[in-house]
Image 1 (cartoon, rainbow, N blue to C red):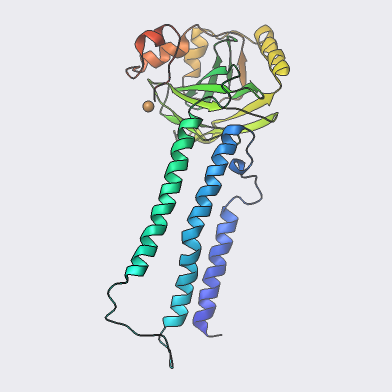
Image 2 (image 1 turned 180 degrees about the vertical axis):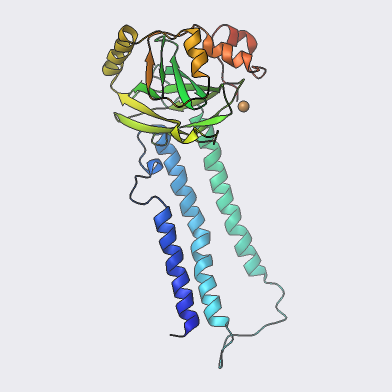
Length: 298
Ligand SMILES: [Cu+2]
């Protein structure tokens, strides 16, 4: 082998090694481990997108290698030399038609899924509503029907759609439980909505998806999915044994800090709605928000 080939091979090996070492290999890649219908539907889209991308990428890489070898300047090269080559109708049709078909398929499927995923994954089942507030640097969960609240963890029943209503009382963030579905932004003064559902009981890792300062790395939470009866028992236990959240407690939570998990048997009524209105609320339907019947804006 000539030295230039050694250099090439070394660069290639080093590049591949660095890619493998920095990819988080060995850790579970959570979006490929869907635990519910929303995440599964999104994973189908990921596979479709990767497959269609491969239709372009694999031939391009193979052609690149073939052209470099066939057309390089070497003694006795038989490859045709055509400096006047200007256009080929056949090639133009090929390389316009393939992307048009790919973008058409991806666009259509993404369109359908986007609208489907903005609805309950199981409209025949009564959803659980959880209001989520991102703070510096913690996640606050309110259960408006159960009247309890938690910090940095949320329990949900399995096989039941959960509507997360999201806002921020801090710089905007993004709410993400990768095993259950894609992320949705939390923004001050507005409420966004995210439907998720867990089929399998288990503990799912959640994290902010939008950098918000020094405590961001600790802004993690757990979503614990368990059968409805166990969920009900957990609600009773929190309602009976956890402390109340006073307005002073809430104000303290909104101050920048890193906290562990907390539970509260009650919280100041309407505090979520009030925070949205205090932070602007101009994108909301005011009357409904004031009635505590928050409508997510889209
Ligand atoms: Cu918005």
